[in-house]
Length: 539
Image 1 (cartoon, rainbow, N blue to C red):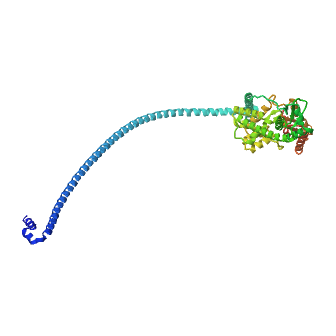
Image 2: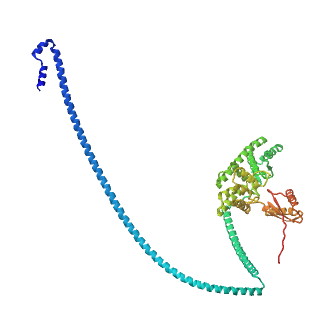
Image 3: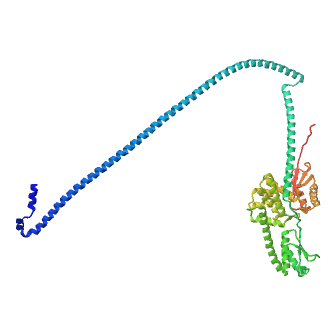
């Protein structure tokens, strides 16, 4: 302290110092002031640093204490959790042990019970085995007795066999054969009798059922039939129109007939002319042309050609509409447009006076009804029934209408089933599907309706008789039968007069004779049969 005082005293300005310093006083004063400020700042900063260090240490101490307290608390919690978990594990182990002991006790009880039951069963089995053994001893005794009896029986049978052989004069093999043959004959008779009864029953049932199905189908498709004529009457506005139709020196009527291919008959019928042609389409085009000519009034060759072309387009449009309406009415889809047009052309075709389109529609409905009754394909039957006569519209000499129609349908991607039904509806080819059989039946039903076709019974019978007569006129023919409504004739020849080499020539000669002497629609198939039989009768 004394040293500090003296030092401080030394620093204080004295009068002598002031006097000695004289003019340097202001400078010293500033230096001293600066030094004093530095000292004071040093002491203050040292104090503040010490104070701050103390505060930091205190805060660190507090934080350290808090962390330790928190760690102790967490450790205490974890310790409590571990203790609780250990207790739960001990409790579970004790419970599992109790359950295991309980289950073991239960199993021991069940085993004891089972053991007692098995013991009882073993005792019963032992008793039963003893009883069986006693019975076996008895059976063995009886078996020995039976052996003795069997031996005695065999001896007796052998004696009887020898006696029977001596009396009957037959060996055992011969006697066995006779007995087996007698039994076989009796069985064959009984079997044949049963089979015959079953066949008769099936035939009667089948005939009855088929008649019911046919009657129902025919009733559902009952339609009125009108015979299409081969002539068309066109009414005229006046008698004067006949002269204009004929024209000067007949040039108009000649131009009309040459262009249309139709015969124009002008007779005494008032205000009417008749158009005659076996082609209904040509006759219809001619009718439309003539009606338009009479309406127009200007009749000359150039006008006839003009209106004829318009009539062709109009009739063609009608044909197409008829085909489309038919497809819509029958519900037939996905069919080629060429086939639709062919179906429409059927409306202008006739078969013995029966409209072919109406006939085809009727066959389609009949076939679909029959298919529904027997469980066949209804859509297939309806489609094939409508298309079965399309060959009648196709002009060709390569085959009958069934073959032509089948080829045409195959060309336009119809299914093989439809093609076969078309080709086989007159039995020219074998039937491949039930639907094909139905088409043939429906075609026959539709064609045979009373009033459906105009051909008289007398003309039909005469054609059949003529066919048989022509065939019988050849040497070696023993008999001939016209079948399939005159579409086929079966010729039977004598094998002694006609050999295998000459048979094809006789068949070909019959065909040529039919072609030259008869007029008939379609084709006639000649089948020549040569057969040799050897027959003997046992009495």
